[in-house]
Image 1 (cartoon, one colour):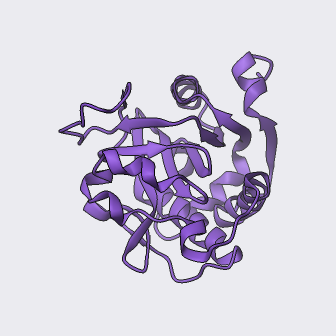
Image 2 (cartoon, one colour; image 1 turned 120 degrees about the vertical axis):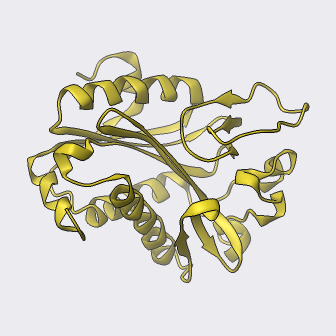
Length: 232
């Protein structure tokens, strides 16, 4: 389905938004894989996971060379190369059935990018733009403020986006993030000098992502409860 018409299909989709704090990357990766299988089996369900991570370097399918100083980099099935995740970075994972929604990966990436841009504008940082290809992510003033890397298994997506809010940018210096010099990376704090509570950022993002994807009916839950098995 072309344009944004596919978003109407969220009216028939049970959307679960799971929000966490600073989470262990491997635990969230395993949860994504489980939810991806669930969404492939139940087409009318979808999940958006919102969190931060403990310090971790992750390597997408296009990663080639690694610095020997890196501690326990995690190889994953998402697109892109190596990147860093850590506290102060807003990470959003999208587990959605493209067949049910009648869209493709580009439709979901476009909505994910638009959500990040709208968030930055609401926080007082206009002028960012989405890019695809080697420069995939969100860019502003010639610098990269957000990274994007999705994976597809059967009909459903997983993995997603990472937006630097107050991220420690020095952690990028051990890598060439997505093939670029580490100095290409920036953050909301570096660009504006402002600091927001990450809890407030996540609350704003929930409102914006549901508006952007045109999701009217959704449930908000805690990632901790999903990880402990208390959420069906």
